[in-house]
Image (cartoon, rainbow, N blue to C red):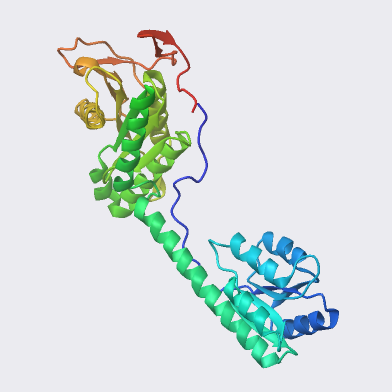
Length: 382
């Protein structure tokens, strides 16, 4: 199973500033060379970056590459007129705002009206009045900056509404939306499904030693390790203060145990620097699987994962427990010291609700075919 090391789930980007640090970039399209040069000269003198072309088709191609803040289009041009170019630009930039200013003759009222009807934002008349031209261009650019700022704030708030601010993982509310979707998908297509519940051991003791700063650093370190341990289709969310829930679509027993052990080793092998020394920490992990005899619903799956996690904590923490049928727990026992290898153990009867064993090399788990169990790969590709 490939390790996912992208920035998925990273903290939302900080909104852009209201005033852009770079000079505005303007595209001027006019087939009249003298008028085009006059426009370019006026705009460059005012501090704008100007790209000049002589027809609407070139303007469309240039603007399509991005980075343009305003288009200044003559209405009458070869190949593609200013009105046609305006119509295309407004359809191309429906999600963003690109001001389009038309250049017309003073007597061409009909074209100005038509241009405003199809989406042009303003117009200037030939011959040009420099002060009026710069005032209209400046007004359009202010509107664009405000629009961009509002759009960035909206995107930022949308990201915050589904992400945990400290870790950048999905939050509790979004988690249950996705969990419900993935569970219904598993039911519909009769696919395996697993949940991994991760809890940081003795986080309060770490807070007592180094304050909230150390505890927060450990939480972030665990979240980074979990992200490195899962696929892109897996869902990772902050479940509580020091708990994380990983939703694993199309994952059987061996695949879920592989992910859990990878998360366990990421935590054990990445201590946090504090006070000039490395501060080790560990995690306990509970795993639950669907379908199984005791897990038929989404709520039962979560309860099973919580039950397995509680068993891991009762066993002393720093270990993995997998909930199985009849309440049995499979536990690759963790060592007493974070970072040390897993220890071998023994097997117990269901009456002593756990059996303890060293992790083995992953084996191909069963799949369903006509009610029988047949071998297939650990994690079914989507």
